[in-house]
Length: 169
Length: 169
DNA sequence: ATTTCTCAGGACAATTTGTATAGTGATCTA
DNA sequence: TAGATCACTATACAAATTGTCCTGAGAAAT
Image (cartoon, rainbow over all chains, first blue to last red; front, side, top):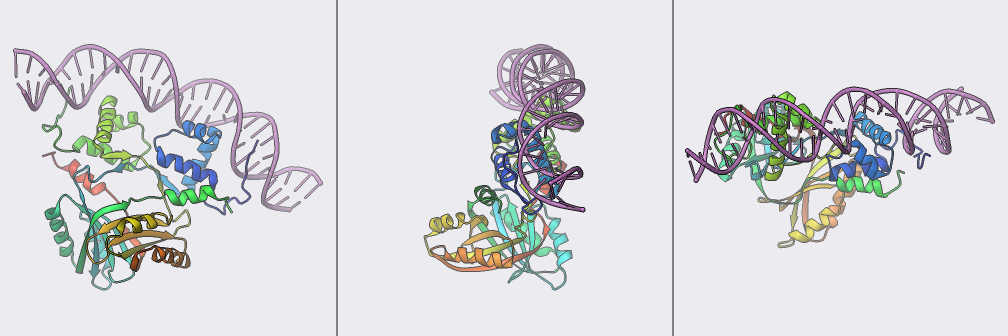
């Protein structure tokens, strides 16, 4: 018996069942397909199909291992706004990408041109990393903020919960 | 035959084999323990033990599903520097955490007090989210930068590769 | 020298996966 | 309105994986 079909197929990229599945996997990522189906109260094939479809749509991109950089010795996170020479973004990004401690780079509107997240082992290590960044050709100016704490760690949960809570449309 | 024991036990949180294992899992997260052992050329028990230990040490915190927010309809990422009233960080963070589109909050040194990553469905949606943030009590000032592109997506790989490349100590 | 670790290698039952199948009700299309 | 499609349940079976336990061998620490 089909319990609740949703009317729109390709409209909503993530429907309620998808959201519940993703939330389940968010909380306990190592669950197998079978276990998921049990917890969600649906057939195994359904879970399998949902996961396949989410993957096809590009919503679910994988299950990468989550590493705690702090536990790996990189206890320090900092954010840097980098101002660069006009039209040199590609080169600069390449230079930044070559620095292992550079964990993320975004090109942004506003005062800075690039927004960079870096990690380091200590304050002096951060100094070293920052020096590296400044040494990248075409980097004009750099202002760094150290992350003192992370009141809200990276999360997607609330977004999923909203889908789950409300009817698809 | 134990091929290569490392000399330090609790010193290096991640040794070469750990790094290779984590890299492998980074590239193909859904691999099972058995498959990992095959690829790394070690016994299954070893892989199992390594994963357990990494988890115990807190280095490996899990395998959360990676979701592409863009594919979920949240195509816009922005960063906000939030200035807040002295001594109100806890309240403000609580208020921010209540907004689903707020995906990450850090307390930082420097000009802004809080650094916030938000997502939105569109420019006008972003407007709405920003308004929400400004409405959080004790938020004084807010400057937003929209992410135009992400030349270096979040990554840990280079850090692991460094461990892998060089001998533990 | 002895103890303690880590790892290779192997074995076992229980579970899970991959892959099909058929049937049912609902939506979509012509 | 009569198919055609689609999503889901339910079930089946072989192959693979997991959880767990064991042994013995080197290496390092006491």
